[in-house]
Length: 211
Image (spheres, rainbow, N blue to C red):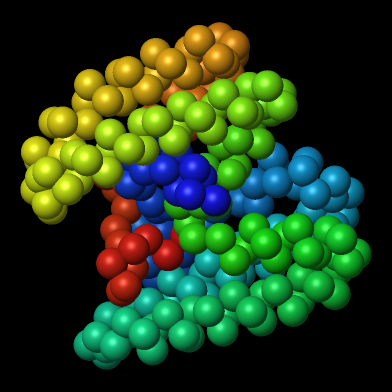
């Protein structure tokens, strides 16, 4: 799980862009194809779950925007409300999924957003067992350097960004020795997509992006 979080951080602190329900910048994310494949969903089930997935995103953003409008600053309260929406979503999902599939889906939905992004990337990469072992080892090694940089610069974002550049280059060089050219292309495209979304998107009321 920690490796998933770190993978996400290396890809970039990014966000989905929101543009619906009178929120010009909100576009809900479609149900991830790679997750559908991993869960072995048929077309009908994927369509039903996809609608629930989009609705959840809309409801969460609606809750956050109402809180902003009302000047709500109690982050714990907002988190409790969004967690309740997630739990209601899972209850509906349970009605259309078999027990094993639901268990896997629930595990995914309980992940933090960064963990989800990293997990979905790994699914896209379709790593072999040998690649997975090396991929995790590279992340673990880079993580130590990343933590040292954060501690050294203590919240100075520009300094952290500058110090991370050579770490990222080294990280990608090591990955290129493990992944195929096609997999590296997928990795880099995912990183760029997250960067673009991060530049356009905002954060939720708890300081983190809601999805």
